[in-house]
Image 1 (cartoon, rainbow over the protein chains, first blue to last red):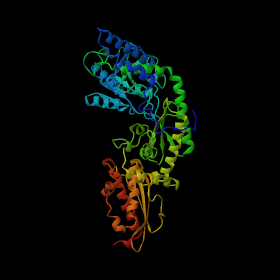
Image 2 (cartoon, rainbow over the protein chains, first blue to last red; image 1 turned 45 degrees about the vertical axis):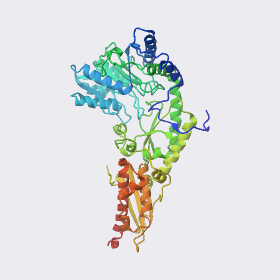
Image 3 (cartoon, chains in turn orange, green; image 1 turned 30 degrees about the vertical axis):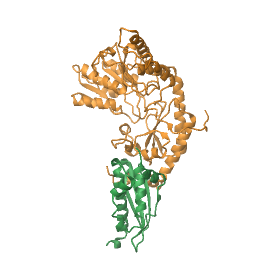
Image 4 (tube, chains in turn blue, brown; image 1 turned 135 degrees about the horizontal axis):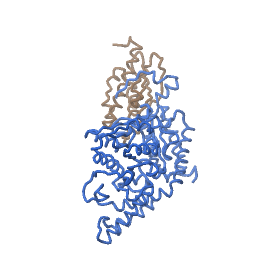
Length: 411
Length: 131
């Protein structure tokens, strides 16, 4: 792998959004589309049995990645469904016990919008503050607990800023108080060690496509003992998945998920080292080439593949437009349908002007050093070009304090 | 977001980027928008004091591609016009020229505001030019 070798454009640096399916995963899946096409719920013939064996093998593979037993895994269509099932399932099942749920402001919308929906149905939601790195403290959770609290839902690691939460501490606290603990671990699974037993997790959402598996398949871990967590189903029907999620199983997808989880488990340490090295290389080069760049998120308690940077005085969407051959994402309002800058950056106290200037880079297994070097160079060139065009950069260089200016904002 | 060719052209080859001497009596400066809104435009005009014709115009913009293109286009359009003619430029003309989608209309509004702010500044500095 040469640092100066040719690179194929465009370069994908958006592995937080999704990942390519590993060829070994594709290979494992293929027979289940054609020759081994049985319905895993067909209990009375060979076709069904073969499919069921494959599903159960996959269930064990996925369970192993998070230290769970295969009996505790429910397959879903993805993490959005897993989050909905966990939160709505607990809310419905335990509504006689209480109607109070605790979460954080930087959760994925699949958690936040589900909580908001429950609020409209009479539940009470406490959204805990996060610190400037995006972490929720166990102490803050403790302070918010009430006798009628039925669920705490705190994400394992954030999808925008990569910050890792103190999950074992929060898990222990919930256990001590007999409150069910759910974590959205979509970004953490396959990147850092996750262990539901050691970490006191009762419900955990995950998805295949963030770990080199196919889209459209996810899982929810549901603890079976101490405590045994019960869920009301969202989808009713044939009673598949212990009655918690009816519907014919996506056998090829599940097989692919299993294989992807097995590979992720095998490669956990080596992937971590690789991703961290590439990510650090990108950040080092950007810092060497530019002034006034700010890291968003935690400097060390951070996913190895995440780099979220604000390039002061440059707007994120125009930056992406200037380096079109890099597939990245931005917290700028102009890249969102809502015209609001990233709520995650806002929650950690990043000023709106720096939120507009943020870019999220994420590296993956297939990223090369040459790609990182090319990307760093393009970022530096484009930021410099846009700063030459930026009235803000000019004013700052003239010694004007931007906070002292009376702006005529439009929205 | 898919941009039109004209927006991309202005973004890649912005016209009249730079700054004029804001302390000069012949120069009017407009600074509109706000950093927390994600767009700030600075548009400057240099006016012939006899003919009231805009001899030169420069801009700098912090904002998305459409904001950059709108202000770049605005400098092209005001050049050679009298300040009265320049005041007639409407944001809708910018929208049309650049085929801006509805979500980007505020960029054109900001560009129109920047032209007006620059002319206002020039008139404030040269009150005798008021008709």
